[in-house]
Length: 375
Image (cartoon, rainbow, N blue to C red; front, top):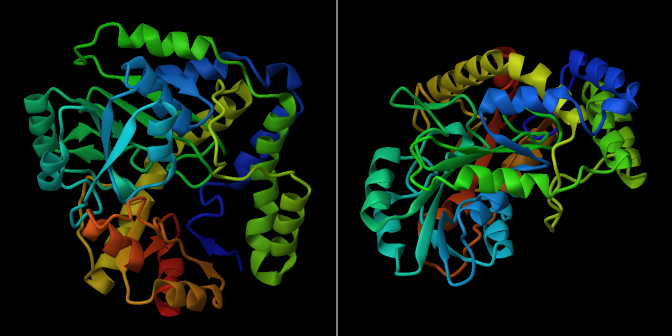
């Protein structure tokens, strides 16, 4: 039986492995090629090697740097505040609301004379309170950057997430909405008042080099390997293969503790083209499974415009629940098990981090029943 997981390449299907094999046999198109243009036109954006690079490039393009503060929610990935620091600015942490998104009331309290931008993360694919946030941003003349790493395809009051602020960035990591193992995209919205930002972001991209061919091969091996690992994980072979490939450095680590900005290679763009065709199917499935969880658990908030990259619940002892599920061959997530702010200024974020468990959503209803039975 295939492992049920929210983190081990849930987007990988057999055709993705075949596509990776095909690309491997055409090394001349690994770095440069037409697939990059295809995905950039799809997003009307500028591509980079990762979501964090795309975010960092946006901060640079908006001239966010020394003596500036960037408001971010405390319930987030460490890559977000790190990117702010790499740009030379200081992250200021804001508490969250019941949807695990930035709380507009606390946001207003944290604004100072040094505040220059707000990062609005649509956590787990559930849209944040954009209307309230945009009112605050307009009043204090703050740049609004949407973090859409979890939310490609989601909407807010009928409008696409990523088109509401001044700019947005997306991630195509191995456990995101669509995956090319690595990759990211920065977009500048037409309503952005800073007219020079679009050419600045392109200029930043043009100064970067492509990743090495050895790095590209490492990423192309990922969907191929997981086409074998996922179906055999619960019978030990998959676990052994995964660990062996990690030890041999045939698979890259998902979250390196540094920023090494590079361009998005054509090989990964080709993987993404295949994934984007499946976006609507993937998100429809995620919504169905989120509705199923809600009907059974009567937990959380159901938002019909959300895409539910993961369905999150609060439990008393998340580590015990995760261990219990693992005994049934189910690998649950706990984004984010630590708050990036430990000063006590964001108590709801700290409470969420201490009690969060993420249930997978890109699975069948029968698999969802197994998940609930296991926990």
